[in-house]
Length: 75
Image 1 (cartoon, rainbow, N blue to C red):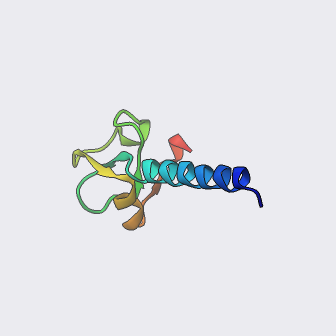
Image 2 (spheres, helix red, strand yellow; image 1 turned 90 degrees about the vertical axis):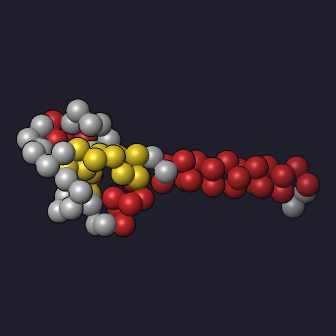
């Protein structure tokens, strides 16, 4: 493997790693501080229209770690 190929692979790996970190740090919205089942990319999502417990911004990684799944309206 020549030096140009190695350099290209290295840069690609760094770019991919940076992209993944950006996705994980994205904020999402949930209904209520506890008991939510879904997360939403938009605070104006139709799936949050009946939320009576308040809309809360959390990180995507926190939402996923709590077992929340993406709202069906945003699928």
